[in-house]
Amino acid sequence: MNNKPFLKPYTVHYRDFQNLRFENCFYALDAYEARTLAMEFNKFINAHPNSIDLIRCEK
Image 1 (cartoon, rainbow, N blue to C red):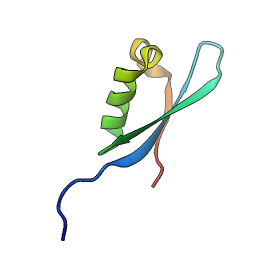
Image 2: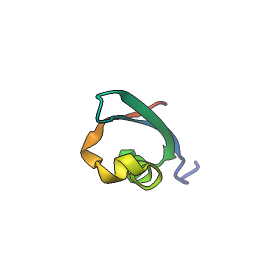
Image 3: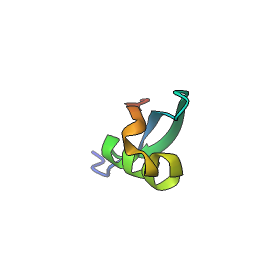
């Protein structure tokens, strides 16, 4: 059996100042890593980490 970890698609949903909902998709090992990637690649989420509404695994 293959014991290597595999990446799963995670969708990170967040809201901006106008309460509009946006989403970004990241391939990560778990939801925490998806959150970390979202904060690294999205300047708004980095400045406002509490704007994340939902992190969902799409698999």
